[in-house]
Image 1: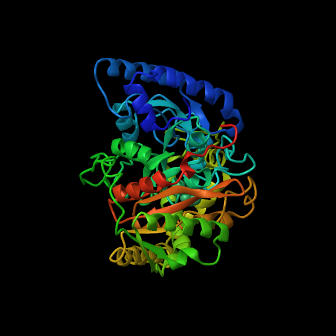
Image 2 (image 1 turned 60 degrees about the horizontal axis):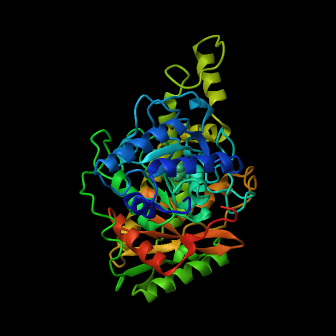
Image 3 (image 1 turned 90 degrees about the vertical axis):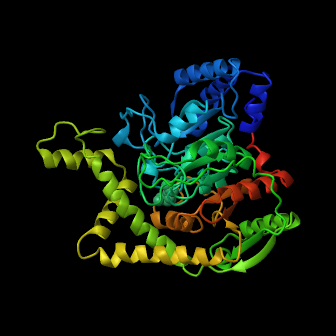
Length: 483
Ligand code: GLN
């Protein structure tokens, strides 16, 4: 049963081949048996899962249907879940039980999903390897010596290991697409404002966006359908109609114009990944797509700009964790300053502290113009590059990551080396564009991802292209050895 996709689960439940409770119990047993090797969960919510599964079975028995009714999923541990620990991968929130559900969580619950647990993640979503979690590193099911990518590494590893058919995740600079690529999954980062951020613990508010991680584009469509939509509680949520994503999956790719940015294929890209990306382009050409070289000339500035903007916003967002209102508080503070200093010093890990310091510096009087303002101008140039490119092409295609999943610990002494791994994903966040990563082959037994980008609110086009590709390839069906 664990090999079933969400779409197959929907059919199985509708045909009464199994109940949601049976499926949920089978997956919980698998999590108990296999997750100790992978560490993809921070909390397993067994009681909640069984009660939600029973409720879903009762709704089906009463005549209700719905693609996600009774479907087991996991939530990245930065989506607030009422009465259940929401740790954000940090000691700071180790004891935090949210008093409410995030909009994404409540929308998915209304659709009938069953929450099996909260997945591991880099602390406060900062990282590309899932090594900065207070709860320990997550291992890549394709090879336990390698990272699964981050920051949604727990969601990715759990889905890749068939512990879950799908999970929620978030993407600030690549954290849905990059772990999808490194674990052989399909992951979609929606347009900024498409999915509500309410109840999603903030890292960098102008970049953060929630989305689905699953094995297929078809399953991402099902999840996005339930997650997307206007939410008055999120002031950056956009009131745009949500199309029927599943209905658009099979549209023809005849005449689809694909842009290959020359900057995505330059130095720094593993040539074995480049070969697989070109092979995926050939497949899409066979389906009728036409290809054109394009240029995104300001891409080289994306990482420096991101590593000013994201830490600046993080330093502001994370100021609320002060040891007073909620979260970790140090023992026996001697005065207020000592309380702040030690609560934050003991509650946050080293990467989070580094980002807070960089961000506070970039925002300080005298440096604001030189760093933050400058970075915002670069952001505009990057957006303009995309707008110009989308005059000529319908989607942009390239590698999701420059390298394969690296060995756990390999980049621990060099944070900048890890930052550079996001070179192809970060631009979509800076511009607010939707992006998808889909599996496109293997090198040395490790998965490789191809990234597709589209204009604002064209998530449906990304899902369509990926779905058509997945009908003529089988990379997305491969499972790691032993799973
Ligand atoms: N790796 C990037 C960072 O550390 C992106 C993380 C993310 O998308 N949450 O900021």
